[in-house]
Length: 134
Image 1 (cartoon, rainbow, N blue to C red):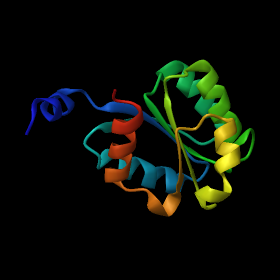
Image 2: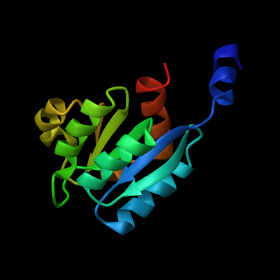
Image 3: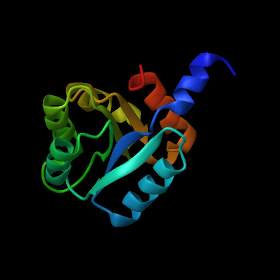
């Protein structure tokens, strides 16, 4: 292994806020995050409003956010989170195909938009290394 890979392995895991209004899917998000090498869950939220407050208080490195939720919803919550913490990596996840969310995701400065069925530990590791671990 080269020196840069060793440096990546030595850093503490990035903190993640998992957001979904359905407890079952929040549990799936947490399980996937906990299977990554570079991430650790530091909080869970069941609404966009709660996610914004938790982002303010916890200061997560990365937020995984469901798009469709009651209240302000994922896209509006992401816009608020990016306004508070512009350096936070935000990933929108949805059952709607990402190609159908591209315009809305761009408006809120999401770093990535994923289909829920595509979520894998290796993909989250790749997203973190691409966007957040410079």
